[in-house]
Image 1 (cartoon, helix red, strand yellow):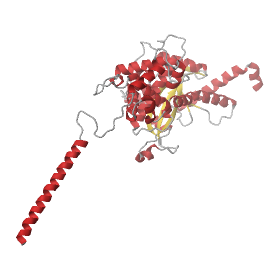
Image 2: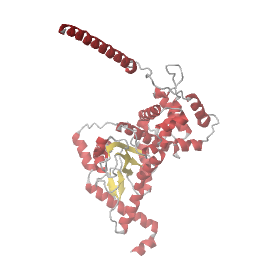
Image 3: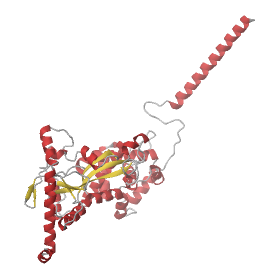
Length: 434
């Protein structure tokens, strides 16, 4: 009997083993058919396909904005897309010429994909209004994933095509115009105003909160910018965590690299019978006492100090006004960032600044020629931070950070503004003050 049971147990265990192997093979085959993707792509099994009317959405866009006689006029187009129609068309043509993503192509079934201008419209509307990607599906027949892809590709291509021209230091003719404009405001030698702005990062990973949370109590990313009276941004440095203050950002910023390496144009001016050979920026009180910064006079008591403080704080509002216009024009950076990658936020911020500068240039009322700033004698602007000679670099930085020059320049400007204010009051008022 024992031998019989042993034989029966053997056949029973063999049968169970065989059934188990068959079930495992069947399960593996099912997984292979449902999860395995071909190397060249293909459709996802059990993925629901929505046949959106992209042709109808594009035809409606043409009827509203791009027809020979569109439904909406140029004023409405400028308000909704933050730029003139001619500038928008130029941007689309340049993007399509440099990136095939913005050229209309057929898909695997032979159906034509989205028009390149259709993608540009979606990207600009999302940058301008800061709406969520899924909200654009109703009006533009584009899925959420495609909307995000369009925005990122649009921003990357704008940077690649237009950064060299619209996010750079001023050329010689531009610098001359800036200096003359600021001299008329009472600040000879002033190149612009510098300050920092925070962009809240709503999707910041929890593990990074300690690094990105600053005084605002929320994760933010810092932008350092230099702007002039016309709100043009000549320098932008974005990406520092929100826990850093303006001094920490300045320590890591390349704002003075070109000056230290001798790659900037010479700026010479005279104030109160003292000569200077470096331009300067207006800054708030947190910035150091360097020769390249002019700050307001804290706790101004005398009439001279008060006159200078009023003029300095009024002129320094250029960069504050620029930040306000950026927020109003591109509401995506006014709201908390919903992007998961800090690099994507950097790309969006740079693209918004470049578009802002392009709009400023296209709408500036010039009295000179259109090619006023395109001078062939301007040296090329290098974007690297390579230092040829360390000694010369450090010597230049010591000159930039000279505290004595900073204090003397501030005092000279105080006297200069007091003299200007006296000229405005007239000789009788000056005698009555004494």
